[in-house]
Length: 325
Image (cartoon, rainbow, N blue to C red):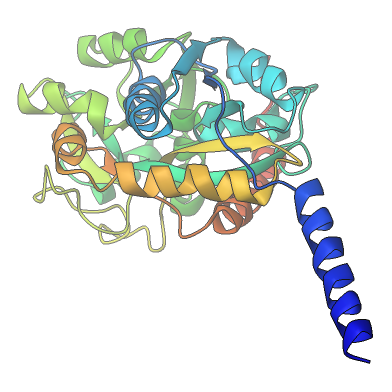
């Protein structure tokens, strides 16, 4: 009987050992990782992605390449990652456009929910409602009153149809009950030049890019789009507290992976994001640019956030008739 029990125990051990040998632990990464940035170099998405890439490489022991693939509505780079193997070696750096484009562009070539899985948010960037100083308004309520007196006449700039500035202005206009004239540009730089020059009078811009013009008194800030005041400009009220209750529209950055990427790999990258955004040297650099670095609680939490954002933007685009050319 003892020999039988011993033989059975040996058999169970051998079976378990064989099964374990057939399912090795995930060794990630074992080669260079690529982060596709679907916008031009130099913007917030690119800067945050490059900073994280450097920190990832230090922990991974492998090169992390940032690959810029700029195009209208970020489609080219996004489609590339959607079709990439779900192995954690091709990631996508995103901003709001990732969630909004499918509701605005006729054939985006990807579904933000079905084709991707979230890794983590990486940053939140407040937007600010700014006006040309010659416009005779000094508050959100004064702007609303003037827009109601001149329906469809006040011009506002954006970096293009469906851009973050366009979406924010449409949300604001609908909640405030006003109508303004949209003037889309092919980029943020020229829209700011014309706003400062007085060719257009109003704009929703990321606080990080408007900051130098606000400090030089070339633009007048009326309100920030977050529910709390910006640390760099505590004197600027939120649009919510200025009377448009519940208004919030934040530019976010994040990392996504192709759908089907193993949860263990997502968790590994998420851990590195959470570690990097807490580093003092990294935070100081971005705090000075009004960019708040922050990781999502889990990859699943960021996936759920993207799903909700995509639904929100899709409804807004339908209700407001927003379609990209």
